[in-house]
Length: 411
Image (cartoon, rainbow, N blue to C red):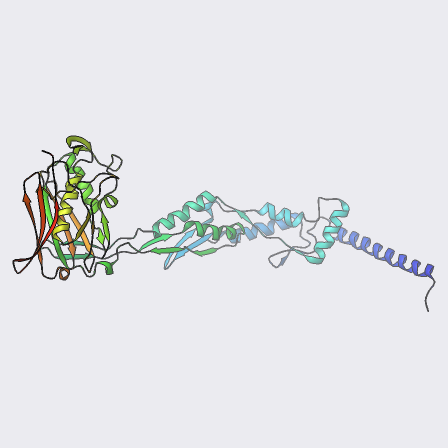
């Protein structure tokens, strides 16, 4: 049977009124219960804090902080190595008062209605209060960088030297390492801030292969050719030694092109070069890097004797005192280069030695690549107009005569 409309309205209003009164009474009851105590529903990592006084809640977080701070703040590992970073090392400080305020202050400080609604909501859904921390980020980064530096190392190329008897001696390559302190920092900082001690993390380390590996030098078994020139100590000798050192250890792979300028770099005061005699516009003068052309000329002769192919070479304007006419090779920053191509089946390797009086350039390679042939250079013509030939010999007999160039020098 359907009730009259007025009766339905009265029942609805009554129900709403009862619900409202219930909420008000419930809110007042919750508010009275939570007076000067942590409200219902507050916890910290599974531990209920409800009903604690402000003094009790402070003591709770102080004890929690003391327990956490007994442990190392951070343990960094790399393989079997380990570094412990203590809280004092990075001024790690638990935010106890912040946690107290967050736990005890929730549901207080607003209007009566706001506080009541907050307390009722927390009683229903709960709230987890975590103890956090602050730290000195500069000190943390310094610790991590120091660890990364101890783990990092520059890759070392495989290299060759000659024994006193002229035998090839091999020196193994070393793989480099680059430790990444920045990535580690970004990984551990949220955990330190959350006081999730002890934070444990592996230092990210990336391996870096050397440019010249052991395999790259494996086929090299002897000296294909060498050439010597004489010089005197002083600024010029300093420049010669500096440039020769840049050539030392250069590897040229099969079909590779070697550039003197690219390898040696700019001859400037900033690069360590001094003022010495040069040939400039056909005249003797002083300039930064004087003497470097003796290095390029010595290399040029060794290249020819090793059977390699010059692809860029320019003579001086005047004959040189340190090598025969037609066998010099001038260079100039960004203008004139000495280049050659390794057309042999295997790589070649440059060794240099400048002892203060004699500059020697060795070209090491695979002796079988020359097929048992030896090479000799021949210069014909006058001192100012020499023609240069490369002679290939087998069994002491010339089997090939290669014309290289004819130079013209100023008188």
